[in-house]
Length: 404
Image (cartoon, rainbow, N blue to C red):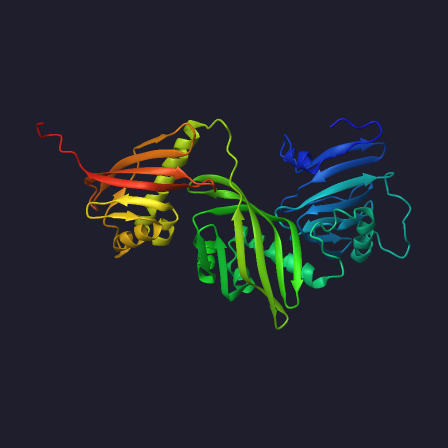
């Protein structure tokens, strides 16, 4: 970025898009003028730093963690300002994977004259929080929470704990956060605390990034409602994904401990490019069909249900099953016993150019590997970007030795 002559606006989104750099750098320099050097940093674990020649200021724009500085440790979170004098040993510890901070180097080598002789090289964190309220009043708490509202700040930390636990599959955190009668709703689903814990530990999708944005706390005595945005990225049977949820969480304080009793997520429909890559779409459906087949081999009827569309129609020899619930109930006998009664695998996939529908077909085999039929499935890509079976119909093996 060319240095401005007198003034400029540096946009966080543009700066974040430049990380990692060409050589894998996790910080990018954005403005240099005289002794001033402004960067955006998105550190990764472990964070190893050497003492810097200039005084340094961090403004945390996302995430939280612990600053080790001059032999002491202080926690920080989104909106806090951190100061580290020249020559001070420091590093970030125990920080969330979404951590991002503006970094400002300034002044001569060796640092400016100490601004308060009563402080050590790095001033107390409480003073820095007060300073940032003066420096960035609009950006510090976009969650509209005042610094002195400790209960609201505690709730925001708990929400961040939720996001971090998704990445680490940390069932212990969810057991601590979720009330016994917890209820979760999303789209057509209503699931219980036990279901959430199962999905966290044994779900088919792996979350690699998760963070909250624009959270707001609404207090009603011992009850609080937290609203905000949850950004989640990762990979699963259908390939990689990036999702944006609008969430509303209801918390209750019982005996001095906040627990969440209800949560609702709205998944913002994925925007699709005008042009689809047909080869990539074919690979997605092939992977989805293969993972769908694996649920029977693994005797996992819950995972099986996640691949069936809500309004699916499965046509069988004896009956036609309409709707996900009927399909799951009708297939329940196939999941009984230690071994699967049959298996299937795709050998042909065709996808519409629009990327909305796909046809998958292949052999159905008995436990001895003998082909006993052929399956034909129509897959539909739902608004959340996942492929699910909308229609399914099998047919017996063609006896080609018969004359017409």
